[in-house]
Image (cartoon, rainbow, N blue to C red; front, side, top):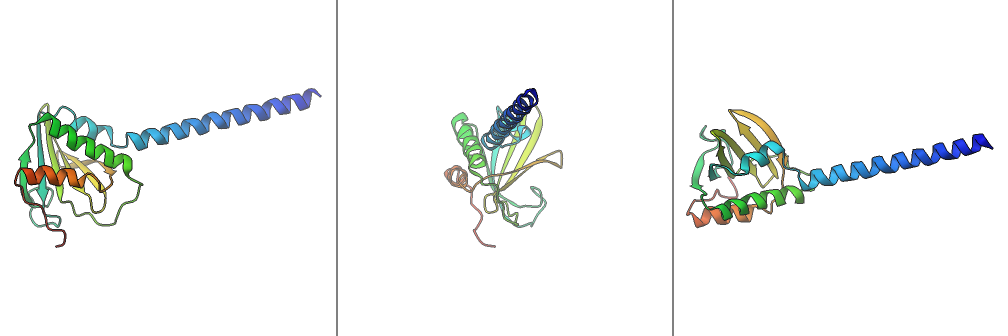
Length: 168
């Protein structure tokens, strides 16, 4: 009888342990999905001293911005516009279903400077990938959805910055 009680208790403990692990994994996955932008990227965007939004030629032409020609740029000084761009990108990260295309044809870029440190973002909404660069080294990558593109395009167009053509 004591052996059966110990076996029953062990089984209950095993199930309790598995339940705790399952909840912890689900919580971790939800956190990553909600806060999926790497910390280094989120910190760079937060409270930037200088914030530039760039329109890029998607195919490598010139070494201006990581082998992409800068078609135009605008310095974003309005805090609400910066927040809108950052929120759109963060929302795109949360919306991402984890898939990416094989291409990388970035048409958008962000250059932020914070405390003298410059961080660049190459953004391809076509393939839903973002690369983060600092000091000539790629320091992070993450996925987004295509949804932030309309916000980025609107800010660029309002500043009379030309957008890249959809096809080469």
